[in-house]
Length: 401
Image (cartoon, rainbow, N blue to C red; front, side, top):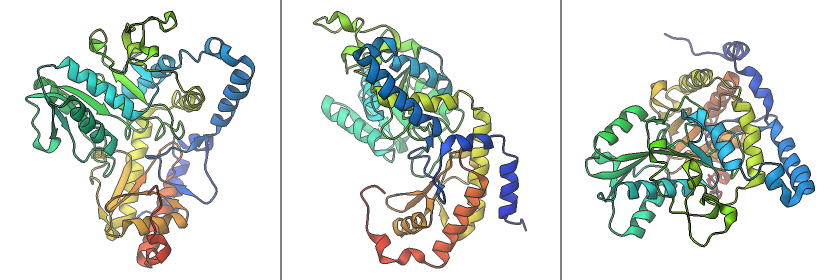
């Protein structure tokens, strides 16, 4: 019989962890085990100073001149180039800015125009809501397009396939190369949502047509941070950005009456970048410039496997048992999952809840330790064993779960 790891074993794992020094680069409240990096990453220590500099030194002293002297105008492309290596693509292929929802709309609309003879959009009905809602909204706007659930596994007449690399509820991971090849063989284009994979595993969407993602989860850029959009270079000359804002114009400051698209990835910019938010994003990316992603993925699988082992059969595992087949989160099912999570948070272990019955725990390897995993499991087992979740105050739903 295999012995369950104890806390001393986890302390030894932490001492040997090649990523352990990165933990000191984040602000982590005392007494909190934070396992929600898959929803909002922790604050990098360098971010406050970088934002202060943007507000006080750039905006405060340079005023409107900051667009030139501080490089605000070039942020969408400059930052896109810094994100590109994290998703396996090259410079000049990613633009940062706007939100994930807007990026999905842009990519979907562009893909549909590249396949004018087809009227089917394939989407996972259980995908993250914004993805599926944007699909439904765009199909409704066009009026003559069908939305087909991925469960049918039929791409033969599809214009575009939109999928998430990692399922937001269960953490189940799609085989990006295989599904991309399958879609292309059927004549469809494919868009990957990387919100739950970028920054926590080795990602490669270089064969895909489009990809989108956020930066406020594992990339730690802060609440409301800019999203990103990848467009494969083979589409740069022909893909159309239907959100033809002035930053996508070939010469924005020529103030021409008609839209004329810029060349390359800039044609997928839309409007004025959110300069202060970009400052926080650039501060976070300073860390990622030094991170060996293979080590991140190895620790991610080790952390999630440890947590699954420690929780044992106390809860029904909703995530794949094979660590290779999941992202960096572990999800369990419980019919009273919401009060269980509230009780857990009240005791310093932060996860989150997804209706109807999913308890999610996201492991961010740069700042989550093996001891964190042990302490979180021990507290969860106590909450379940003593039925501490039955306290009536935990049944009241908060606005954000």
